[in-house]
Length: 276
Image (cartoon, rainbow, N blue to C red):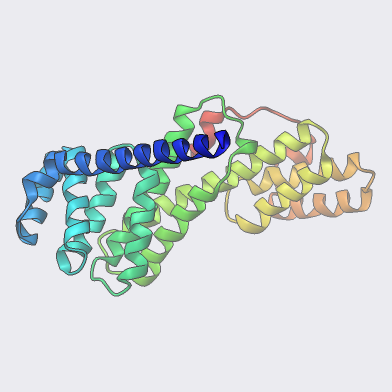
């Protein structure tokens, strides 16, 4: 009997707690000054006020207004443009993790929107600078452990702008950033290959160098990747492969320093990743 009574008391207590949480949430909603302020506003007024705050760089106020717009008027031209503006505001308020999903939702929902070139450019722009920011924030980060997904996402977004919207005003900057991204990605592969060579993981070093050569054949880092493979093959006792790779190096880079002096490990500072 005692256990049954205790269980009943616990149920009552739990019910009180849940009710309190619900009432608290409802109360918070009612006390939200932006929601209260915007009650009864037309979609035009709500969008214009949000745009005004965005123009003033009042990111947090703009975000709240755009979120109300999205919840209250989820369809139409204002809702569509509001999604892109909201993503831009998220990015500028240091929450890019909210910006990218908002853009992806826009791209999936409105594939024929007239501002699709801007949506793709904004996605590339945010991924490009967000990853760059990570590098400067975590200066001790080992690039051999860094996931290049954000860089690749940026590249593919810019590539869509260039290929699908050749007359877009964002094409020139997209091309410029694509070139920088290719060099950055190739340089990242080189960093990882150097890391494996340093710890004498020669097969992994060969594979990383080959990924660089295959995926980024027009970058300046191919020369060192080939030279690295020559050394790795020799260390593994694969002299025929070493000689064949040396011939490829000589054919493509007849003036290479590595033809007379074998490749040796030299450290690459993290901050040089984005140079070139």
